[in-house]
Length: 359
Image (cartoon, rainbow, N blue to C red):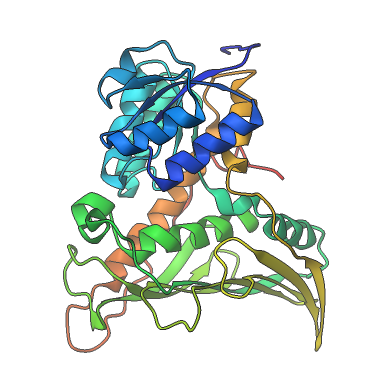
């Protein structure tokens, strides 16, 4: 095991909105020394240097030449897998924005490299760290809901991404499913302890028309699937939907003794509440804003302060991407009528049965 008992020296590669937000969280937490920053945009680099005046300004190519303990990657999705692999091979622990790759095979290759080089790797699955989500997870795991048998998941964004690369399959890996559905699938599998997905049906749309090609980047998706333990799941996500507010984000888990619901407040992307429902009654269990955006990064930094060794729990990312790939594949309409997909292979994560993430 590779031990560290000092403040890690880290770099930031990619300084867009999310990269600068995560960088600000790292600087304010004082969990790391930000010693290097890199981006192709000079304006973003200037903003980063304001946050960390002593950091060395690099190019995306030269940042790998430095002696770093860790690298935070927040570049466009098409670069994630390649840049993460390069960072791992240079001996850097790595924290990558989602998605870790554009497909399950790409994610699997990144995981192989992380394990081969025995380097700490984490993905920014930030919604797990929302306080309302954690309170709901505690209620679920207490057994007070009884046996969960149905889940409904929604993430509608009334806006679309403002970067052209999001709308190209080669650059993004997918549309709203990869961007928003990833968070829903990650929460589902994490909350329910990574059951395998058995049957899956889906349909995807682009500008109101069914997707008919693997190259189509969807802006609306609906999926229905069943898990190995009999749980049924309904999922929908979208960009540019007439949602009547900025966003609709909702995760409801129904059990034999009650239900728990996590939802955004007044259309916010940041403020959430969770409720415990029994019959016609509901009780608020968590509400109010909390600074959850940088908590996944904080967890990674806390681990890195003590060890840079590979953590098998990151293998959970593969299970998520396997489900996303199946939604994309099943969602393509080849005929005028809706296409139904066969059960297909069961989906399960590499290493997740032996290493779980706990609250």
